[in-house]
Image (cartoon, rainbow, N blue to C red; front, side):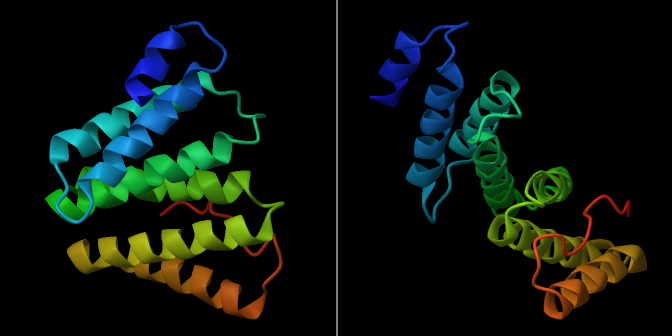
Length: 155
């Protein structure tokens, strides 16, 4: 059904991004606990294309980033691909920067970023990853406001 909706919204249809996102979500959800890597990789591709077609001012833009983060997290869980972990970290940073005015989403992005930095620390033992994760965690417990910390700190 979503494939048909995508066909009804050929490029440059203004709502094509939404059909791409819906199809990508269906592929990711279908994989469930036994992820089919091809489906996850197709979901990544579809969500990347949806993001490229959606204006950053669109209220759904941050949701598209969250969808792509979920794709990369699932891909990392199934393949242990460091590239997927690094992509998730980049996207969590981007999402944290996009949602500074939305406390709940901002906090979710920072918590996810901290978790991914801890996972990368477990793989490589880079103390900068652990330090950045600790700083994020400390700021989240110290201050529950919408501008807790900036995700732009480079690691």
